[in-house]
Image (tube, rainbow, N blue to C red; front, side, top):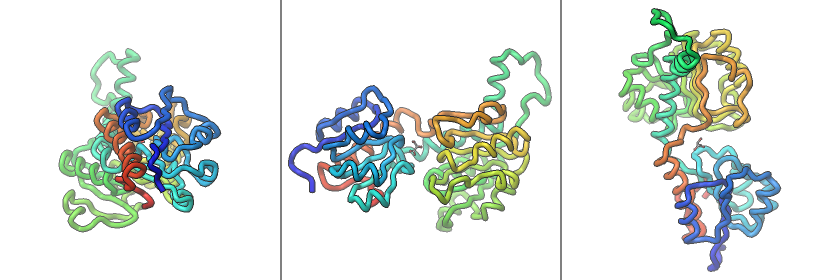
Length: 325
Ligand code: DGY
C-alpha cells in the first residue's frame, strides 16, 4: 500500500515550524504557511498526489472530497473533536482518520473552569464596567454573582474532559458533582470524584452550574435549547467548551437576556467563527474564540500527535490514535 518513495503530505493550516520540519524529515510536504483557509476546490486541488493531510478541524473531509482525492490514505486531525470528518465515508474509501485525544484534557478542563468562574463571578462584566470608567464606589450589590465552591456541578458528557472537570469541582472546590452521559461510568470512576449519574432533566433542574462536554453529532445537536434552558435554575450558569451547535445560541441569548438563567460562558459557537449577534449584546455571557486547548505545551502536543499519526501510518504502517483502524 505504501511505496518506498517518500509520501506526499499536505498541511492544511499553519502550524508550529518544528512540526513542519519534523514532517519534512519523512515526507514531501506542502505547507500552508500563510494560513489561508483554502476554499474547498483549492483544498481538493492541493490534495492531488498527496497520501496524507494534516487538518485542524476547519477542513471538511467527506465522500465528495474523498472521491476527488483517490490517492489519500490518512487524514490526521489536530483536535480531539472530529466532527469535520465523515468517518463512515472515510472507512468506506479506505482512508484512515486520526484525532488527538488525551493531550488536551487537562488544559481544556482548565478552560471550562475559567469560563465557569468568570461567568458565575461576573468577571468579564466587572472588567467591562471598570474599563468603561463606571466604577466610582463600592456597593453591597455591585456585580454580585453566584458561588462556585460548595455548589452543585452538572456535567453533560463524562469522557476524559468531563472527568477532569469533575475532579476540579469535587477536589478543588468541594462541589457536589452530578453527571449525565450516554453510558454510566464504572463505579470506581464515579467514586473517585463522588459523581452521581442522573437523568438530563434532573441535572438541569438541580445543578447550579452546567458544563457541556459532549462531542458534536446529529444526536447532540441542540442538547440545550429553549426547553432545556427553561428547566434550569434562574441562578444557574451554563458553560459550553465542547462544540457549537450543542447549544441553540439564539435560545440561550434570549434566556440570558430575560434572566431565565444567570450567566453563561461560551468558547464555541454555532457556525463559528461567526457568533450569533444576540450573544454579542447580552452582558451576562463570557465569550472566547475557541481557545479551550490554547496553551503552548498543549497545542504543541496536539500538533505533534497529529504529525506522529501521519509518520506512524505512512512511514511505519501504524497510526498512534486511529479512529477507524
Ligand atoms: C479539539 O481538540 O477538539 C478542540 O476543540 C480544539 O479544536
